[in-house]
Image 1 (cartoon, helix red, strand yellow):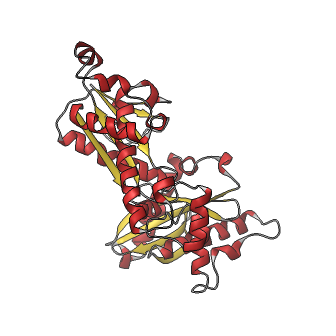
Image 2 (spheres, rainbow, N blue to C red):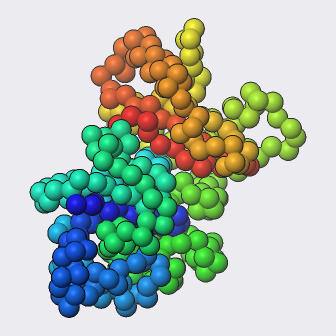
Amino acid sequence: MILGIDEVGRGPYAGPLVIGACILPSAEIAEREPEKYAWFFQLTDSKKLTAAKRESLYDKIKQGALASATGWVTSTEIDEIGISESLRLACRRAVKQIQEAKVPFSEIIIDGTMNFLVGTPLEKYVSTLKKGDLLVKEISAASIIAKVERDRYMIELSKKYPGYGFEKHMGYGTGLHQKMMEELGLTPEHRKSFHPVQEIWIREDEEKKPHSVSDLKPKNKLTTSELGSRGESVVSDYLEKLGHEILFRNFKTKQSEIDLVSKNNDQIYFTEVKYRKNSQYGEPLEFVDQKKHKQMEFAAKAFLHTHAEFSRLIPHLAVASVSGDFVLDEWFLLTE
């Protein structure tokens, strides 16, 4: 049996990220009962279907699938852990429901190129497939249930926050959406770590905080040290807005350094900050290889050893990426 997985809502400025997971009867069974399983042969990428057709197929999938589930991550969680970790978290939440249904599967196929289950016991069962939502029925079904459930949520959201047009653009960064964010301000459903939502968020906060991230745009060519320092200030501002207390900047040992050490409730975070001109210089996770990961672990242990007052806090390693005109791209955890 194949467990198909697909995501909806990776790129919007507002609303949740949803991952669908689905196990279907085999094609052989569907072919033996073509009238009963007519819907099976209509499955395709949800983006190629009308809203009415997706709704119709959704009901048939939920009735005819051997198991189906969706995993959700809220906009607040996305801001806290970053989109990469959010994809992994949403996938784990969806797959956990499939496992609880006790429907066996021997293979997991994820649409695209990113393995959301890397580092888990299920990693060995995973393969990724570009355009999988067009080629594998299980992925098509996962795509449809995720899309329908997220769209329904955004339509209900449009009633709670009228004027933004959520029922039209579903939270994506259309011209209308950007215009209404400027005019009406942000809602709790907006992803404040996403550009340009972040710019509006900072602007709204400027009166409260005189030295905001918007003041950090370079006028002249900066040294590597200055670039790093300003990037750290961007991330520090962001973490403080999330409720973190910044304990230290640039904690150093003989072998390694931690850019930012922050505390939030009973958790302590050790963040590596990387500045890049644009995304062509690589994804944030690429900045932390095995050697760097071990150096961060060593520095975190050294900090907790020398600062006994924080030793009872739960430690996490994190990475932040700042690019262009000092805009935070992403902050996410390397360890849970």
